[in-house]
Length: 288
Image 1 (tube, rainbow, N blue to C red):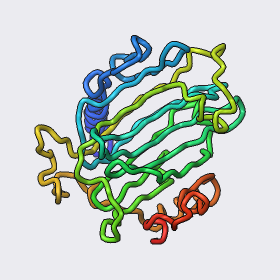
Image 2: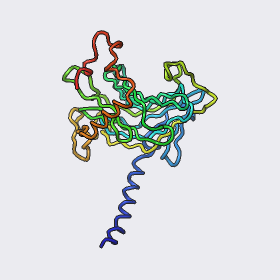
Image 3: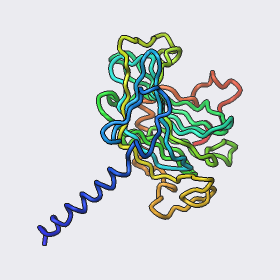
């Protein structure tokens, strides 16, 4: 029986792998939006690369709009001397009161660590920056950067380790992004007026073109089309149909890992920047 079970499991495993592979294809899921040929989809849709040279950067966006989701993307960042460059990977809505959930990777001189910059905008207001070093070299291989966005919280994670949680504290007057559908965007661009040491270190164009690579996109998400969500009501989406992430929260182990990241790798937290907020800290900073 054991041998026949093993034989049966092989085709089942192959089917599941085929499903996983077909679920993520850059040709199907994204449009290249700018860069005049500097962005490329390769390997039959399994790989996307963005390039930056002195003339231009490049970028792409998702075809779908999402209102809540658990979204993963593997990135390999610009190697070597990446000073002055920024690789932005984020969710954003449109309009003057937009919502946005940001990963930004600030390049640096060879041998110095990248800075991972995070921010949350709601109703057009951000100023909620937290910055981190990473515990690995993000240019040596692909790593998974994830956003969990549900009605209760936003969790930023790296390789499954949570680095930041932004809770819904609307009951205390803190706006939370929950009504505007967002697309996924990414771009690689020159920001040497501010990105590296406040703009002191400029981009060395002798190293161009700079390249960031993407693979293994996955979205368990509520897709919005013509105003309707695939998860049902926008105000209280259904948690059925394998949408358990809609009610997901950090368990005790994840809370411990979050605290480990904060203690060892956080290098800036707006909630401790008293000089920036002389009239008093933002309301969410005074809550657990």
